[in-house]
Length: 335
Image (tube, rainbow, N blue to C red):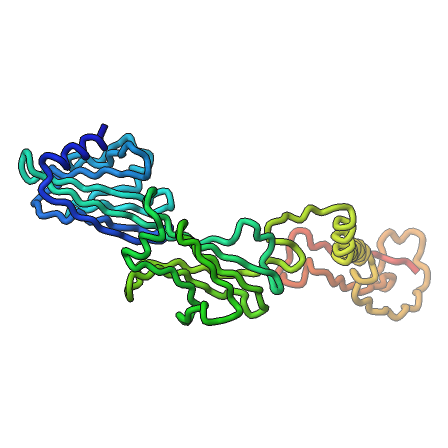
């Protein structure tokens, strides 16, 4: 219905129509101009046609439509232009901006959004030296347009260059082919060791002006594992993994055994009386005195021998005062 309304209005009240082409690469933010001459956007509407006969109404009288699935990526600029956040290839097509100057008079601006996208060939199994490698660069244009005629009329060209900007068509190592009916250009080469982390760029030029470009960085996959395959460990792989862990397991066992032995040695060392008594002062034997009369009930000092015992333990090394548990035992030895 909206498409029919636009068609009818073209036959009745349109006062002017402008056609523009905007180029963008996949993932970029893009701004679609409306050629606004008004002070506000309350009379501005945006419609989108992606190839179907029915147009989608994106903005009506300055208010964004809430029923469209990509509404969060769309916004209206202060000059009534349409902003698209992170463009995808599905966003290509024709965007029509309509502004009413008076009740019956309006102007239309048709903006053709063309999106450039680069990707490896779908048959690519692995990326490494010695393998053939193909990149595909496609320019998505409005459905119904012939890419060949579009290129001629707009003087559009798709070019492959290296990171220094040199056209790769001049190098016989690269095979470049084009499909003018589908706006596709392919780059094919045999990878070398020095191609790892190399950049190749697909550019779209209009005359001598660069419109947009997409860079692709070649990154080699593991030489032993194809890039598109996932290695599943089998019994040999598990055995090899266990063999690699054996030295670590042996080391852990040795450390545990050493800790156990050390603990036992510490217990034996603590219980050894030879280390508790660090020094024993020998005593010269005293010649026994004559045996006292039987009725003598007291022990004379001449009958007592003394021995000095020094105990060396950590319990007493840092104390200089007598504590309640510091006990001394004297033994009386009769001859």
